[in-house]
Image (cartoon, rainbow, N blue to C red; front, side, top):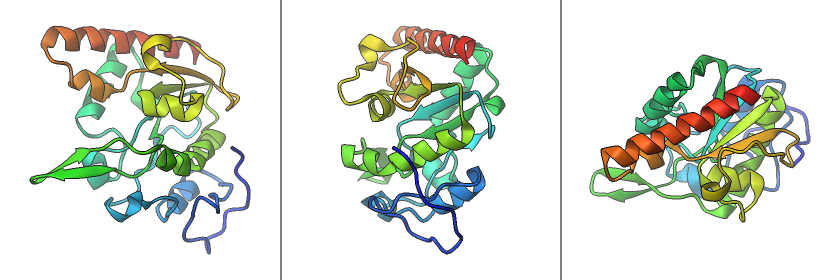
Length: 216
């Protein structure tokens, strides 16, 4: 999805019909995304949670959407899934400071249960509305390889027929012109029913990250 236009400070709000401007860099892009109104998720979110990391990282990690802590802190992968991601990166001997981490959707979609805000899967239209921001991040960072974590991230790039369960861990070409590797989302490991299952899932995730590191 090409991004057209020129960045200008007078641009304030962006809709699906009006894509984000071509950025000069990540900071300008992040500033523009803070005012995105491309779908309705901004209404119940604390803030836009944009990507962060090394500006010209060779490895980009893409998850689904920010969670509760990410929404409150304004940074990707700082909650429980983020801590597990950090552990997996360390085991795969990948320095998080040298990668770029973001999400397919930049606002937290949630439903309330008592005092808790629980994650709710973003809709296909919400993922499509956010796609220009991801395209712009890829355009600026120019990674050698993108790791797509979870079904939402993978299908946002590889199409709705893609299944992480059967095609994970492989280096694939994409319409983005960048090679990709799909794997599980760290939050799925946290949902494992017992310690043995969790350890096995973590080992598989680390193995996928090692493949990514080798090809990035």
